Image (tube, rainbow, N blue to C red; front, side, top):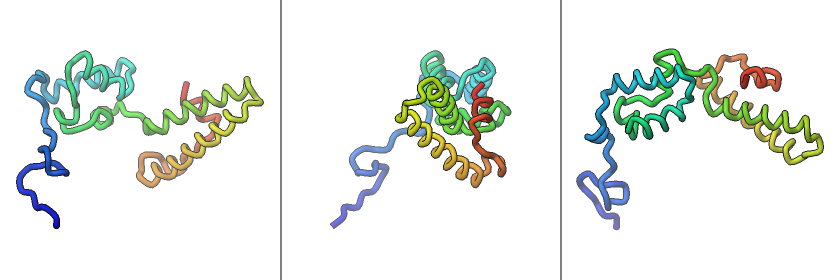
Length: 151
């Protein structure tokens, strides 16, 4: 027989859910945080680096709880976002690194297999992001364009 719980309890019924609002000790307003994010992005930081800088230097534990938006959404609103999604860009960088390694070490079959798996992930993500509209319809991965993207 299932127990019925009433009130604001967590999923297991033991503890209340975590607060979704910013702590009282955060002294920044939402628009100030957005300005800081834009200035850090203009200095060349990635969204994950911006998040760590906000946490470590500014004492902001969660941008989403404070502003209601994540860092990438704030960057895209200010036209500072990347054309290619961040996870795909990281895979493209990895493929370029493995490709340059394979040029020097042509007998490294393990690296060749890793390269094939990485390219496969990139191609699957390409299909997903073209369906979602985050990549243009005719976008294709090629090793030559990947080398240009990373530079």
